[in-house]
Length: 117
Image (cartoon, rainbow, N blue to C red):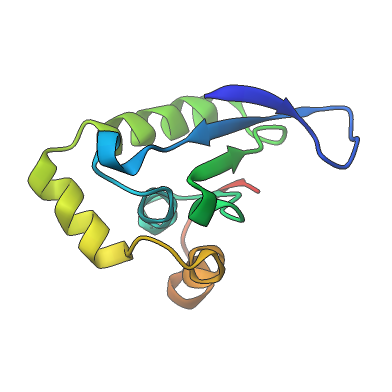
């Protein structure tokens, strides 16, 4: 993970997480969808999942939300190979448009959402 300047010139940085699917056992798209599908829903900038990376915009997140986001990443990235295969099968491995819109189709109105978008 590394910090990158805002591409629009805004005075803040975003965190970029490169996901090497063969090494991690899960694609950026599946990781993004699994984060959004959890409780609470954690929504990431998934515009570049087909290129193998996610962006996290923590500007409006409080410390507890940053901690929760990091913990959710840890859980998913250290899951068993069987669990990662299940997640990969459930959430797929590409189609950035679907990764960005999946949460709209499945979001429950009463759900708490953390938005890293």
